[in-house]
Length: 409
Image 1 (tube, rainbow, N blue to C red):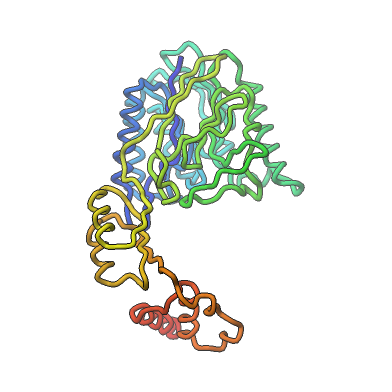
Image 2: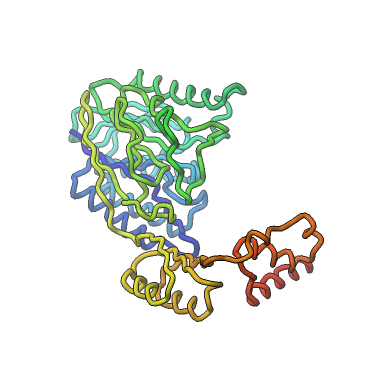
């Protein structure tokens, strides 16, 4: 039997508006390493969105390399990491020749072929092809095969897609490519896995909403989501990245699973428990898999209050979190109230006024004849239409400053 840890969507370097998450990311990656050690995991699959941007910061890159070195147990435990839609394929693959000696394999481009051979740590790459790798670990007498499916953007796919029904053609091209690999390399004498970073769904079902913090990939080169039936029948477990909530998309012939991101990265993820997945597999048999919850990192909350004492009491009781706070008020939030709330907690990301019983909104919509009015009058009308009240003096002053700067330009 082999034990595999599936994780994804680390988004190293990501911020929550002005708040850095780097320290939390350090803690949760240490937690993932502790889980891998405690569970005696043999292989790590990292299913894309390693970084949050194409050009990650020095701190994010350093955190990745240090974390992967620990996860690899100094090269004894192999790691396969594919790129996602947030990653630069060139940046992800750049350290691969050096990382490979540590048993860490970065895969970002479909035409990349991982070199065959035995490493000093005893890990052996026995077969390799575009989008595929087979390895043998010293402690196992059977090979592990992985179909590698990093995110494919329009540029990387344009040579494969025609001008007909691009949605169905995309699915057919990807599915046929994966089937060809599986038919050639995947039999019941090894453990057969799939690692992909795409939007997968069961055909005919309503698609899972993408998280607010994600760049949508419902449309890849003008195409819709892939279907779980596009994964070859030989595969025993499909490790997916992109959606940040842990869930299994399907079980037609194998579990097709999103592991979740290690931290909540937007308030749409506020109620999600973050996980990694442990898979136990052996040749020719269905795998067993189970999620393990992650505890590190600041939770995200959305809360609504209508008075200051209750607001301050909750903030005092929940110091270690990020919060999007909606405050119900007759008019705008008074300066003293806003100051007291912001001073009470260091993790308030948004403080949103909710106006009680706004008056005049139905009569304050902008009309065609209003377009001849000056900018300040139009702004007042817009604000009253949207918020149900007049903008205060401070806001009007800022607006005037902005439009005066634009006039100067």
